Length: 220
Image 1 (cartoon, helix red, strand yellow):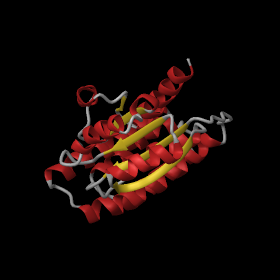
Image 2 (cartoon, helix red, strand yellow):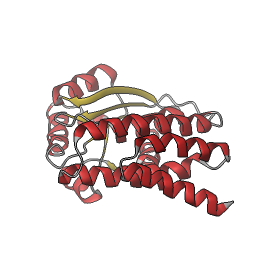
Image 3 (cartoon, one colour):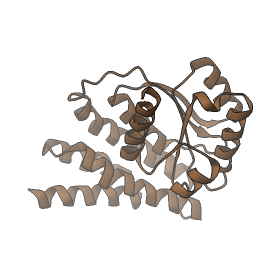
Image 4 (cartoon, helix red, strand yellow):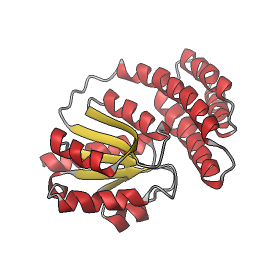
């Protein structure tokens, strides 16, 4: 039983990292039918698979149309897995998160997975979408007064926008009121510390835990 679970997770990861979108949902459905833990499929299958795709995209080994097609399959897979979690989740939070993908980055696959998991945990989520101008982040911060602002990037060329966003929040007098969290393939803990972000989400599961920690600190 355990071997079959491991095999399915491996197959899911490989279907993503080797760009076989048709297999992704098929493997996911088989995994769910077996009653295995959805969180394991996300953290050990989808997350590492997407990390590899991010690296390939950054190197030019895979191109945007392929990433977008893959993203649709990964989103469908994630929704199926997360729907099994939401049945068990009874938490209701009032904590608000504004989330968006930095301007110049027209994918939002990783963010989409994080977003769905935050909803499962009961966060009040404002999704700005992908390729979001920094001014729109600031406008959303003023309009929604979130507890956390999350930004993601898939490419090294767009991550500099995260540092600029930190500066803009400071200039507008908003930074002390809002916790910031960043994530994406080219992002590291070191980079988060370097630009002054409050947290770095290594993957979807980690981002949710970090978000919980940040709001708990706010309330503490």
